[in-house]
Image (cartoon, rainbow, N blue to C red; front, side, top):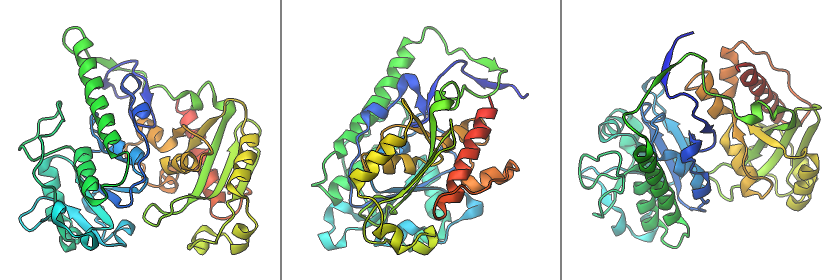
Length: 375
């Protein structure tokens, strides 16, 4: 096995993707923003140990992101279905503080990376050139005390987004809390550095990737694999539509749809209008799901969006994103679950639940088994 230069014995939080010693989850509270934030991230930024995009992903109710691979340049994005603007301080950008209410964008596109990287993205992605550009007014210097900004007006991604949203929707509560999480990130990192005695010592790790989270290890017998259909972030109200799950211990299945007006995309989800007419009320669904869960259940889902949908619906908190663990242990950019499994040669049979969730849940269960086998 190839030897990897990395710290030994460090436990990770697979939700915020930070070492557990600097876990941010307790600091991040959900903000019900109206303006969808779409983050276009430079590939080199996604694994930066002190990047701030994850704070936005966990903290904003309306958030989407894409990795800006040049070989897969998007002509557009679903996040750009509304009135979109690019947050970028070019000469033709309008000051956000000067926009009238009816001029404010529904979608704010934000570039994530170093100043050099964001300049390259704005230059190379043609569809960005078609968007009107907006900029932040002059403000205080960045609080980013670890990474040095090239100019006074340059700020971290989370600072830029919070300042922009504060101008676009000043009545939205909780935005300052995202900066508090950012401050906690910086404080924890500096505290960790100061507490470390002597120069940083690195060891050659010969035992493969970091340890699996307990949900895939010692606690796997009480794991529950999940998949949720939910309304898209860019089309409020965002909420749960269908929840399916499988208990690992006995293979039992859970499949319920939330009662309500049938949403758009029934054909895509392979559900019928009757599924929603005959579905459960949220409280009823929550009680049924709680009864389905084993004692001290460990929740597993491929995408963080499923765990977020449960949290926002009040059905559960916490859980492990299998995609995050996969990126840590198997391949850094897994892409879709279907593609990741195909590259591993995995064959998956649908489970006995309704709609496209039959394949999605089976794929998530297979991913969990493959990760468990990677110990």
